[in-house]
Image (cartoon, rainbow, N blue to C red; front, side, top):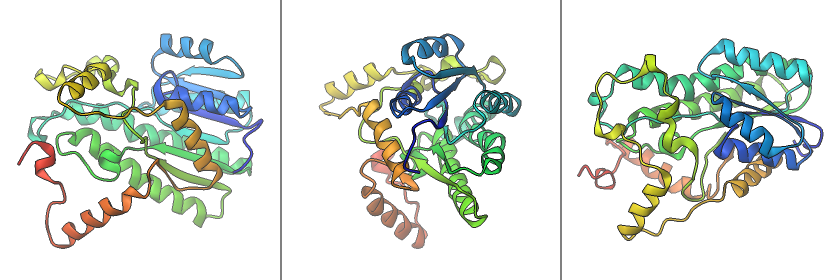
Length: 291
């Protein structure tokens, strides 16, 4: 897909962070953009900030009916969807697996995994029926999508699912002879100042933890960077607008994997595969503060 002008893009999690940057990049290409988010005030502010041909729809991606209503709105308003960014995501406390609660998985997987599935179910049949070329871009993470961090078991397992889901989707779209393609988007290039650091604000009361843990107290991006600096780590920060532009170029180039520094995946995956083939756990414990 080379030409974006006049096409329609839908971005979930579009009120802030990477989602808002993707919306901005799409507008810069002359696209009509629909941003969806569960946070209505932030969605309104983002719509005003972005300007241009933007429609905003309050959407809870963990709710299939809500995503279905989003799709109805998009096709009623624009008649098509050409780029579907299933981008909304949340995180959870970093805990040993036996310290997690069912609600941790219900919330994070409900948004990160079911949210992607709901987007595909609501949009892809209509996109195929439209007969036009298009892309479904699912936001994963190197944490889980490539190699998990042990203490982020809830989040990492959700992103592993997103990567696998997208691989299956990509093969199906090609195998069925559709004009659609899929891509896994791995946000990368450095530290990312996004809303993922403080997603607890959106955790439903019904899915609250029964037991409070120290790990639940969120660290802001600024606090994390300050702590890293004091510890002697100089960590680069990736500009979100540049990352969004890189993502559009990946779509133009028909990349299935969209990731800055993609070549670094090979060494990681080869090492993981070798350890698994030897019957070993591939996670380096010393890198996790566990060994």
